Image (cartoon, rainbow, N blue to C red):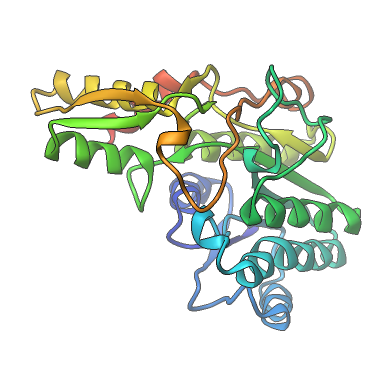
Length: 289
């Protein structure tokens, strides 16, 4: 099986590359090989590779930056996924695409399920929602996997930023009123592998939109505390962490206060579940040693 992965150096793509080699030949296209703002280049690459599966692990994920460059965000997050879906349909192959909790406004009391009405608060969320709809409109075989608060041992993310700042500072103020599930990119890749294996074995569930995050919930403050505790267990210096409200940390893009996603449909229809966020964090940290 030939698997085309868009995105080369992103957090999820790196973890996918570590795991999917056992199930197929990986063709990984980074920005140098595939400019997702160029529709004809996307079509040409897919038609040249002629894969058996497309995984779109590339996105414009700079949430605040998207506010000032909406055209680029929509080109990559909205237009490109629709083109990939069209090319997948032409080849009669599945498309796996990753989306985000930012399609919701965060005002719901409980966890969001896949049938809840989206209402993104900013350009990033609107562009990702438009990408979802573009894929659905094609009506091919697809899995849209919404996740949240992604981190890993690569790139720029909350885990690595906190590990650095907690050792550099004596005190850190971290937002405590945004709630969600920190999700290791390795968890996303593990679940993606499980979905592919079920599809290959003829045990596929229904195609469509699913939520895929770690189990449990915390705040950014709680996540920072857990990272700090791990540093202390390693005998490393660690700043004290103080909780603050979102209003004390203004950003160009508005974040949803509630990013909790109900992942029970993925378990029910595909038999794929995720670990709790603390277990996944420990697994990620073990890879650093």
